[in-house]
Length: 162
Image 1 (cartoon, rainbow, N blue to C red):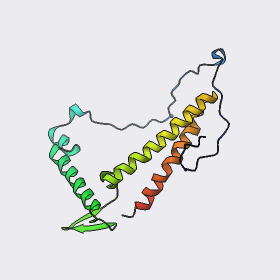
Image 2 (cartoon, one colour):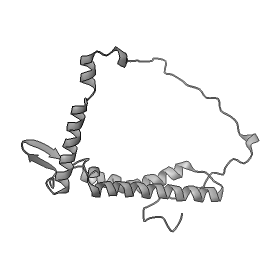
Image 3 (tube, rainbow, N blue to C red):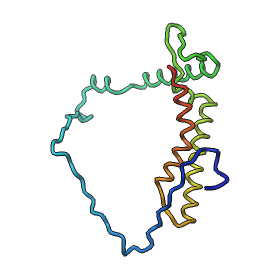
Image 4 (tube, one colour):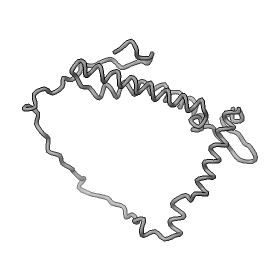
């Protein structure tokens, strides 16, 4: 642990596993795949076998994608300007909800980026510490990142009112 790490609550440090230094003692495991006795499979249609109507009903066309992007931009602008201050808003007969729009606002994008950067920084610091100690504990590194991401998870749960 380093004094440069943020205030996140980190899990208790377990004993680190030593790196394998003697390659003679390493036993290569044979890779194997096992299947259940009863295998269930679904028939799928290969994309080349779709007709024009099926293609149109399964995928969005460029006009539909543009329309969806414009809707998200409109809703994010409403959220940013305070028009979606409640959990649900009805504007022009349409129902809008702010859930998931935060990342499309400048403040939300900064928060998301900063949270990710903090988590990555914690992981890099721990990796360096483990290298210096001559150990390797990827599970602990995963726990550190999960602890850092917990703040964002709790904020998302709190915001999920719609």
